[in-house]
Every structure is written in C-alpha cells, then in structure tokens.
Image (cartoon, rainbow, N blue to C red; front, side, top):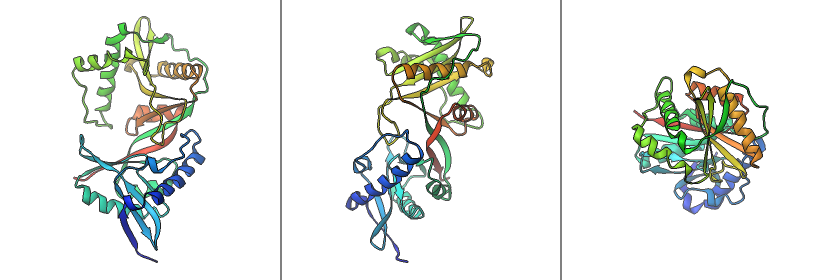
Length: 298
C-alpha cells in the first residue's frame, strides 16, 4: 500500500470539496431534512490539510482556533474522508501545529465510521443538533394556557434564563458557565422585541408562568439549517411542574405555530450530558443531524 502524504488544503480545494460532497450526499440520504447544498468548495474553511495515498485524495481536515476561547474548532464542513483512518494522521499534525489543548468538532450523526475515528482519538460527545418536521401534534392539556410573551413578561423571561444556567452547572453537565448578573440577563432579554427574530412563548397556570419556549429564525446554511426552518432555541419549565405536561404542551404549541406560519422543519440542539433535554427531545421526534465532539488535553 502506498504511504499517506499530507498537503496544504490550498492546493487541493477542489478534491476536498468533492470529498465533502460525497459525505453530504450520504447524510442527506439518511436525513432529507438537511439543506440542499450545491457548491461545496464555498463551504470549506480557509486553512487545513489534505491526505493523499497513491496520488488520490482520501481525507481532509480544516478548521481554525477560536480567538475568544483558544479552542481549535472543525465545524460542519470541517472534515470528510474516503479513508476515515487518515483523519487520525491529520489530527496528529494539526493538533501539534495549532498549539492548543482543547478541541471541538462536528461529525455527522449518521456516519458511524467517522464517529468511530474521533472516539478513538479520545473525543467524547458533548452536544447534539437535531431536526424534525413541523407536522402539528394535537394540543396537550396541562391545566393552564400558553401565550406569546410580551415586554411586560421581562422578569419572567429572566427567571427562566437563570433557571437554565443553574441547571446546566449541576451534575452531570458541570457547565463552567454560571448565570451572569440578573441585570445583564435583563439587558439582553429586553432586546428580543426589537424585531421578530426571536419568538418567546410562555405557559401559565393560575397566573404563574411555569414554562418558557423560544423560537429563533436562525439563518440558513452551515450544512445544517434547511430552508423554511425555525429553530427551537430555548425551553425550560419550573421544577415543581415537571411531569405535568407543561413542556409537552409548549412543544406541541410551538410545532403548531410553526406549521401555521409555513415553516417546513424545526431544529433544536441539546447537551448530551443534560439528562432532561437529552431524553425529552428525541421522544418528541427530533432526529440527530450532527454530534459535537470535544477533547481537552490535561
């Protein structure tokens, strides 16, 4: 067998784009609710490497270091391979050249061969991106009502922002991001009524807001967000009403609203270590598109 050779991405972008097109065709065959992408070279990052064997391209790995976090990131178009094992050689080279100790990448959830490569490089699953159709389910009764939030609900919205932060720092999530000061959360939340990009809904029982769900008109692209899509960007209920159906009711309401507005699909993402969301969303029919993998070297 010919030896593996590694080259800069800049000289083999066309061949790397062909690899990405092959990978993405497999993804869309498994999950039709992915965007229809035709020009794959435009999706490729600027920097990276390509592996060849016997003069034929077998893999590429392309990404960058995020200046804010100091983390190397290979995103939705960050890698593809006809010979997945070659990605391990590419990672060995790039991880040394980049000079960082934290690494994150996205891998198609429907490609076991690619997932296996990264698991054997000591990456673990950190989060899931998923999608489903917006076929409207039947309404769910929970002893309350659901309505769209207004600026008068600002403090309730801040409550749920803080609730989600607090939940994520507990075991087994162990998030390092604690809730910012309430004034900061309030200032951020007060901006959501500037346009219709973010649409918040509230569940109430006896005048008390017990749950919140936020939809976001996420821009299309990144090999993930299809046309006519709405993103389920936020959802939380109070501990004391968990199991009452409030979360189910909010989700059903959001899906019906999206259907009525002409959206075709809904995306969502969750931390795989969040016990509540990692069980709730798959049961609501959301199918994984991508996994976010992470590795930190001590």
